Length: 272
Image 1 (cartoon, rainbow, N blue to C red):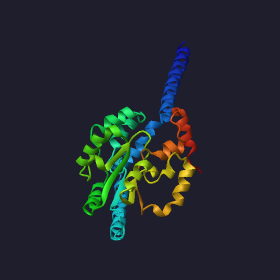
Image 2 (image 1 turned 120 degrees about the horizontal axis):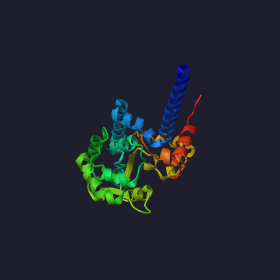
Image 3 (image 1 turned 135 degrees about the vertical axis):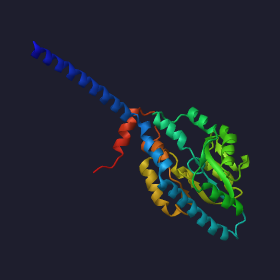
Image 4 (image 1 turned 90 degrees about the vertical axis):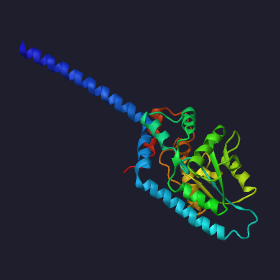
């Protein structure tokens, strides 16, 4: 009888252990397929690594050097000099928003993004303000072109002013309006200014040729324009999000399920 009791107890224990493991496996699977948590590592890197700060300083040091040369060489131009810069992850650091979404396994939404923007809490990207103020003091007009929605103009200007950036009035900022992509807004500046430099974390901040392109095309275009980077085009690091993922890896499709996204991301990896 005692032997039978021991066998029965063992079977029950094994069954409970198996159920526990199955539950754990399901949790791991669900976590794995929740690709919005994948962004955590990128946010951790941006918020903590000295390398991130070093790359930002490198970008703005390069920009300053190239701008100095442009100022010297502009004596024959009939138009005043200007630079065009993106805002998010170029001038303002929005990693707290990305951290909050990633740690909760939630994707970007327009509503949550606007709630973050309205807080006027983004801090400056390392080196950004010193560079912009250098440009301003040397009579180079700074324009901000961003795909933040136009309704956010006032709070965005408040955030830039809080960060001590120059030109924080409406005439110098062009946010997103229906039917006006970044190229249309860039052309508005080019009418009256000699734009010698573009700054951004996304290739569409520099030229419309990068708009809505898949990964292979984006890479090929980057290769064809390699001489412009570090000269006319100054790229800031952003490991958290961007068109490299939405237009490139996900091919502009915003309707993939979490499981499909997980599969797409894994299939994009180069393994040995």
